Length: 246
Image (cartoon, rainbow, N blue to C red):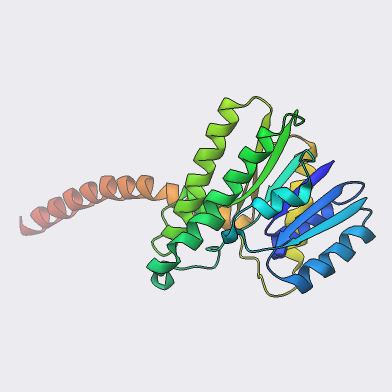
């Protein structure tokens, strides 16, 4: 199986590449050359048939990436690329908007279209790393969240038009450091690999994230409950005051 990984030098991307490497052909795209070289070694040690790393920034387009696969069909596309995963809205810059759009939205979708244009492709499986923030309103992460929501929407549209496309969305609800080794990324990758083999369409990772989503959706219920009881408390206080006066 030919596996393409965008964002392969991120913690999540590298661990996903490793768990899917055994007896597969890997194409790894990332901006950090040293990390790509180290990841290539790990994948080969884990049993990959061969590994091709593509040292490139996604904002430069996908022409060289498409050229690197030499018309070989991609059976699994893993997208862990993001220029906004650590971005808070107060740090967002207008001049960086093309970067956000190209890396987080346009280039992964363009690559999918390129894969589908290959007549050899009979089935394309997509693993898309998303976030639980798409389910809640995050006042500080709207740029990041909005791009994830848009990409999910376009992916579902592509799937609807192409019966050969299978999509699995990973909603991550736990902070995974990007600049150091972490067991969390490995645990996440193992769960994704297990869920992929079980042909699941949606995977949640991180109990804290699930709790956050639960509490967010609980807010309207709590508000109505508070309003309901507040009315009765007011009536009780008024009645009590009247009794005291009499």
